[in-house]
Length: 286
Image 1 (tube, rainbow, N blue to C red):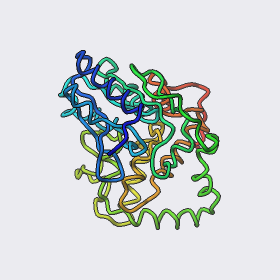
Image 2 (image 1 turned 90 degrees about the horizontal axis):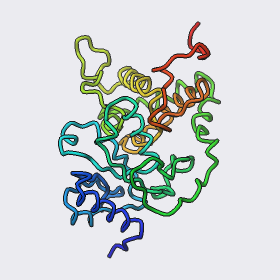
Image 3 (image 1 turned 180 degrees about the horizontal axis):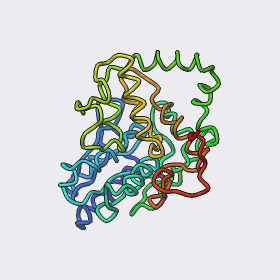
């Protein structure tokens, strides 16, 4: 029998209250699953809030559902968010994909998820999701690793020569089978029609070979530059174990260094590519 923690009990109470009061028509959270990860749960009746859980298996980013029309038609949404998930929601709010008035945010104080803990949890600085309508859980433990080393993995790749880096990425991206799981799980890949589905003209070849794979991953990397919040979902779901997080971290590192900007830290932020200042650096302009 699964032990119900005080955190899960508090979460269930908050969800039941939201549904009973009419503050939300549906609560998006987590429930038990036979696999490694908890399953997404859509709860519409107060008594069904007993299905909800929160533990180390709840590492999926539920913000991916917020841009979907079929989900938004359910009514006002309450969603269970960790601090890292809240960063993705902040980007969706900033880009006017969703409205804050249409959301009830149930924040969960989180000390890290995964078995063992996911890489992103070692550098997480948003374990206490500030700005939510309700927050449950005890004050979280600090991350086990210095947040200042968040770019350590990509910095190790940067130490390679240009030829070694090219060989490394050819090997990694050559494994891609173009399943697009990375796109489907990303809360910020919400285009109604993806560039890879456009055939007139065809910008990216769809066959799983190196040329098309590189084009696809470059296109996606550029699309997420200044937007990616390093939730790690793309890398987690990749069946070929391609280190996709390193691509996002590289772009995030550049934006951090050039503009002092980290995506998703606030819904009111102005992203570098949507605002202009005469003091902006121009390292990419010759």
